[in-house]
Amino acid sequence: MSARKKRTVLTVSEKVAALDKLAAGADQATVADEYGVTVAAVSLWKKSERSLRERWEEGQVKAKSSKLAKYQKVDKALNVWFKERRAENTPVNQILLSTQAKVFAEKLGMTLEMLK
Image (cartoon, rainbow, N blue to C red):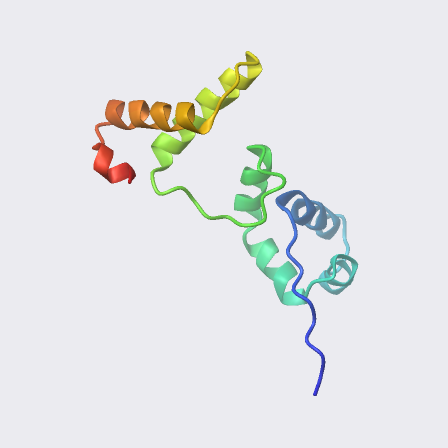
C-alpha cells in the first residue's frame, strides 16, 4: 500500500509566483516539484490564470480558496467602505460591518431577509 501524499494548499501569491516561473520558461513538472504539488494542479492554475491574477491584484494574496460572496455588489461596496475606514484608522468591529452591510443592501434594493 502506498503512502498518500499530504495535500498542499498554496496561497494566491504563491500560485501567481509559480505562473510567473512558467511564463519564464520553466516546465510544469519542475514547478510542481518545487511547490510540492501535482502537475495537474499546476495545469489547473494555468487554466485559471486570469482569475488568479485578478484576485492577486485585488489584494487577496493570502487567500487559499476562491469562494465568492453570495451578494457580490454588497460585498464589493462593504470592502471599499472597510478599506476607507481602515485608511482613516477608524476601528471597525463585527457590529459595524453588519450594520453597514444592511445599509448597502437596502441601497441596492435588497431585503434584509436576503442577507440572512
